Image 1 (cartoon, rainbow, N blue to C red):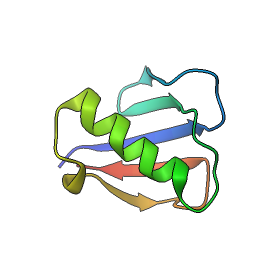
Image 2: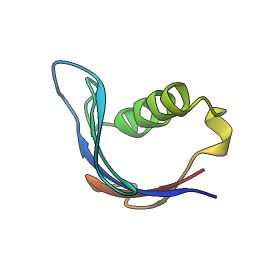
Image 3: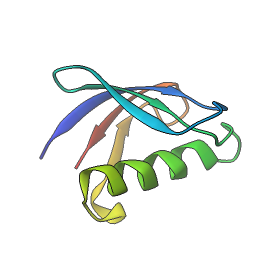
Image 4: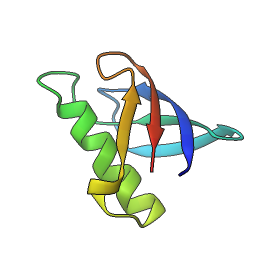
Length: 72
């Protein structure tokens, strides 16, 4: 399993992933952090970018925070 520390920037004008260090990502999302929409959009974007199924991506820490730990 690969683990990443993710700093989430919801409500951005564009969606992109920036690698800020080894195993560290800053992710910009259009989705707002309301009713889990940002978490769903994060999983969808990571799955597309890393070419893995959405079901294999888990948010292990920080589901209600901008700083998250992701495993897949």
